[in-house]
Image 1 (cartoon, rainbow, N blue to C red):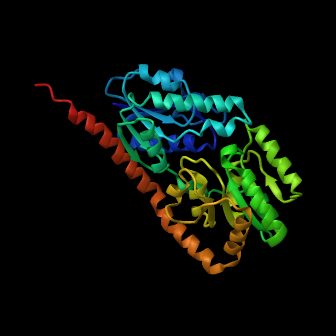
Image 2 (image 1 turned 45 degrees about the vertical axis):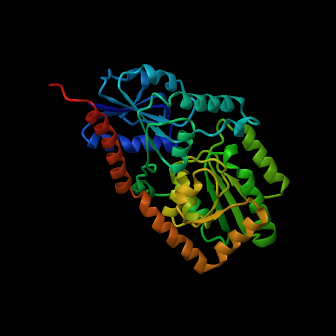
Image 3 (image 1 turned 60 degrees about the horizontal axis):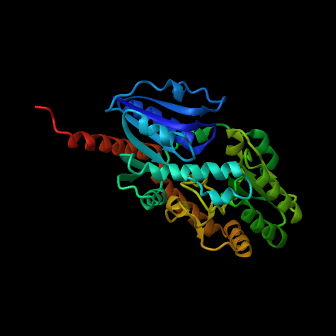
Length: 366
């Protein structure tokens, strides 16, 4: 019996791709033949378990097709014709309206993805969503099948790799407060709201501070240009747009960060929140989509986007040692829910449960 993951794209540094690649050895360890098959593969990916979709082996009715879904893709149509049982791992799709001002291509792609998801409601046998928010979204679309929730599987051992020493040496102990957000430059992530809060913080609270926006702007160049123009209009010299950087660079910025500030208005999970927990960086985040699910009562969740109040909150987190320790203690407790062995075991239970349920419903031949 095979349990095969299929997905539109395997990219370097992408949370959905990382989750699929982390699950592959887990599935193999359960005794199933497996592999990842994608329509597009980043040339930098050299994983022997990742193959082009054209190499998909012949499947039997008892085999599992595990569809990793997060964007518009023809796989929503193709999977209907594939032989095998259809399961989905759902990471959510960003609503198209966020992109209308910046990228017609991204707007069309997300519209296509949302429609394709709705049309699979009667095709998918079971779903593993990576947040309660994502599960609720599917139910709104008419999904009646079994839906379980499992966080993204994160191999935390990767974070023990060496950070970029040049970044560490350049910015460590220079007397500046470092405010960090990690995530691609995208209009749903609302980096402009981070810049607005930072502008007040730097001008009226702490002039020795900098903002690091760590993430690629690939495909969102128009949005990126708007952000940089906005920062320039506010005369902010200490906003660092890293662009695409290596993993060692990301590790360095987490180690340098004093506060992680998230103003995103749509996330299906938001891995950087968990990464901030791991690196003991106190989190301030706007309460939207799956943000509250992922934080699980940890960090500081804000209900309104007031740049002045957010700036003052940053100041308190930085200056109030007791509050900072309380926040980090809460995040440490929440981090236990994302430990690798715990999430791996949960996935194994969910997958086996789905497989056995169908098997049990089929009467044995006499």
